[in-house]
Image 1 (cartoon, one colour):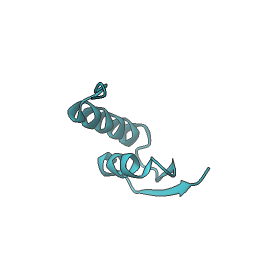
Image 2 (cartoon, helix red, strand yellow; image 1 turned 135 degrees about the horizontal axis):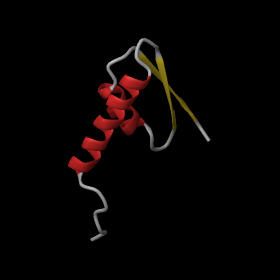
Image 3 (cartoon, one colour; image 1 turned 135 degrees about the vertical axis):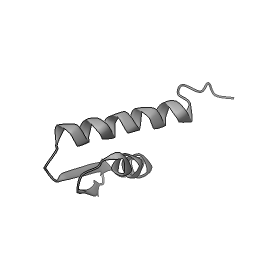
Length: 62
């Protein structure tokens, strides 16, 4: 079995912290989140839920 580097709770805590920081740093602005396809979809949607601002997101393929 592969070694677990970060628990689900650790990841959720950090994503929440990032969302709070984005909310604080960009207060009063609209935010656009851009993710790279083939991996960012779930992370970006979790992050977007933590941001308390108007946010849109899009994806790019590489």
